[in-house]
Image (cartoon, one colour):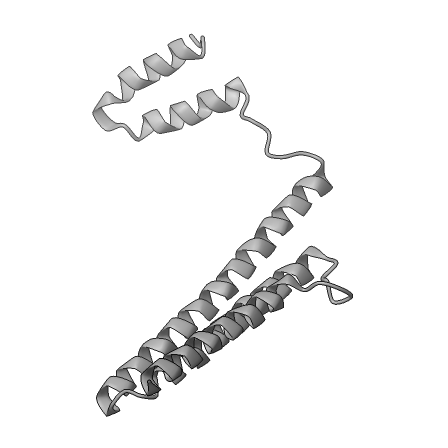
Length: 149
């Protein structure tokens, strides 16, 4: 009976931790981030909060274990938390970099222009220069493909 109660308490604790973590990620109301940078920061903080909550519940779960097993359990929980935090930070940086690229494209008014035929021929010619013994055949094919004589 006692194990069932402690197991039930664990389920309730995990459910509450998940609910609080999920609510932290929604950010409904006046605190809603208005700029993309603030949204990225808020998303990272929510992920870190979820990782901290998962770590706390995992540590409580490890509390009943014996010494060596408890140390291993706590170490695994700590490693999982640290990995989740690092991943959240990496995702934030990636999102901010994507936003910067998008802003740069919008600011310049154009994305990268596709290569012209002359540019494509120059790239093919450069590739052929590295071919070694097949260089002459490659150059002939490139000239034929781009109608160069």
